Amino acid sequence: MNEPITGGNEFRVPEGYFDNLPARIRERIAELDQPEQQIKSPGRRFLPIETAWIAFCIVALVSIALFLAISRNQSTFSGIEKTEIPAIDLADYLNLDESTVIEVVASEVPGNLLSFNGNGQGMVELNGELFTKDEIIEYLIEKDNPISATYELTVSNIINPNK
Amino acid sequence: MPEVEDRHILDLIGQPESRNYGFDLLVRKYQERVYWLVRRIVISHEDADDVVQNIFIQVWEHIDSFRGDSQVYTWIYRIAVNEALRWLNKNRLKQLVSFSTVGRKLEETLTADPFFLGTELELKLQKAMLRLPFKQRLVFQMKYYDAMKYKEISEILGTTVGALKASYHHAVKKIEQTLLNY
Image (cartoon, rainbow over the protein chains, first blue to last red):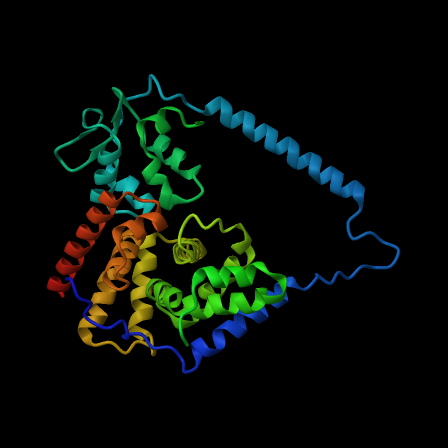
């Protein structure tokens, strides 16, 4: 499969599409650059300052409570239960295929730190410790870009997630 | 229209009086490549049109932060990939479905697309591509259709060359298998 089957022309575009596209993009940019029109009632603030402060305090309190709850539940990466992490689940989350995940993780981590079951399920064993699926996925969820997340799945990043 | 050098375009964009003109040149230079990359991901022309516009708006908003540590096209391509993924994610979350279901829905879109003029074999190839995981489909597209070097793809996707080669190899195998099973 070295040469494309088609010259890439199996899809069609409306006539003149590319001629008009730059102008349409310029129009959208111009719209975005317009200052927002705010309709204000005379003699009234758009949002009373007191209400804004109360809302801010509520949000801050809820955020602090959530942060404390999450911190208490956060498990360390030592002394965890031995659990299998099916590589296919990881791959499904990342929308990558299992074999690619295995290849990439294997290329990043020294061979003696990885072991995979012969039945096709993946088990990530790093420095003699096993990581649960939830921990791996939680780590990956924290990443902004799932595309790059897999390729940071190295030993040091798992053991020191705050690095 | 003869191709304008990126350096010249960036110089034009860097000056207030020629910024719009320079940006226009940039769009004209890369719009087709970006469009076809996106079109093969989202399939429908209307969706591709939306995504492409969003891409170039992002380019406009962030062009001043382009440091020149990569090719302009690599930088634009990276934005394009992220926008396309954002579109796929948005679709998936809107319908509360998995990526594979989004792929199946795109297959239906492809079958019904009046702007698809390919042969039966080309339709099968496109459908086979839609069954690949997103990243793998991207790698396949960039190698097969855009004939990009692994090093260029590596800069765009932030993936090692070795992993890309493995990914492309697996993509080809899967597509071959899918086509054989049709």
